[in-house]
Length: 472
Ligand code: GLC
Image (cartoon, rainbow, N blue to C red; front, side, top):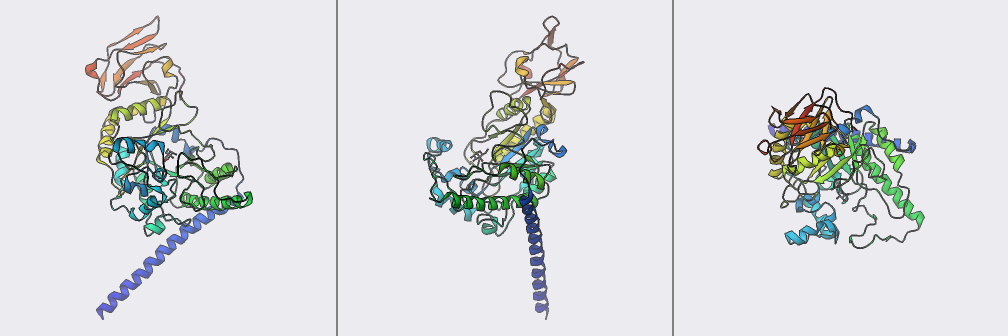
């Protein structure tokens, strides 16, 4: 009797759970279908930079985290590119590490069955990022390999098929919200796992148009691909509440010129009106994304520079992390030109991060405790190099002069008034050893080497009247 009651109880419980689950998934489905319906009505409009008040956090954000995570992480290989032969940026694998990272398509997709991270704790990842001053995080929801980190109703390559429907994005979004970071979704529309997507898997060989289809048939194939892509996007844009940033990574289909950029971007904004969009779907977006290098000139408008902290985009168990001084130097230079640094890390396939990630962020966080005001949310002065020998950032009535480790000798500024006072943020001390020449309006600050450390030393200059330089 007792056993029967217990069985009945478990039976009822399982029916209840299934109902809740299917109700939930039905609601989610309905939300995304609703969003998709709007795509039929939206008119393409010329793209202009967002003026939405809830998007204006972006140019202030300064420092952020890029996360490349997916099935490739299990093998510590370059996201998606590991299936391609002769990929130039995998050379160090052959030449330094002495092994061939080329897996080929078939072996690459064998990793699908190995990825189900037992140690995934994005709360830990994001807490560390927040403590280091980061203001947003962007995760690869789907890289070029086409594997979606959420259970998608579209296509055959997502956690729906390979992880029993586990949603890896939800805990990430929750963690970002908990620690006050804006939520960014990287999404690669170009999708090498999509049946019929034409893509040469040898970097040295030009892309071919292998299908032998008529233009008409190819257009139909593109239309289906577009439906699949926007279907996935409708899920990303409706399942997780407010998404602050969408980071596309290439849209294209052999033989098709009209990739519906303006229509799609107008639709994305219709669903998430405050969203910030990067420029990698048809080249239109709210900001520019120089990748892996610092531009020679300050870019116009909002911009972001993405770089990898330890050599590769994906999990690289052996590559050394670049030192803190390198990270801060990038951050200072980018910020002095009004941009954001998007610093990349690849978590391991089991969901853990290398200890260097936490150690580095904690040291940077300590620097931020003292000097963060000079970077996070501070304005750049884009033409600083025309009057200063170190990068300059500012806030109302004060300037921050950044003496990076490579800087030697005095800090000099020309054509400025006499400052009211100067402090050094790193040690929280007033600086008295500066000279000012009224005739030439030249300010020189002599910082003795004993007052320097191997990070960025910041002089905070207070003005009675702030010089009028080109801000932002
Ligand atoms: C390039 C690479 C891709 C990487 C991205 C990051 O588009 O193809 O692997 O994710 O840059 O900016």
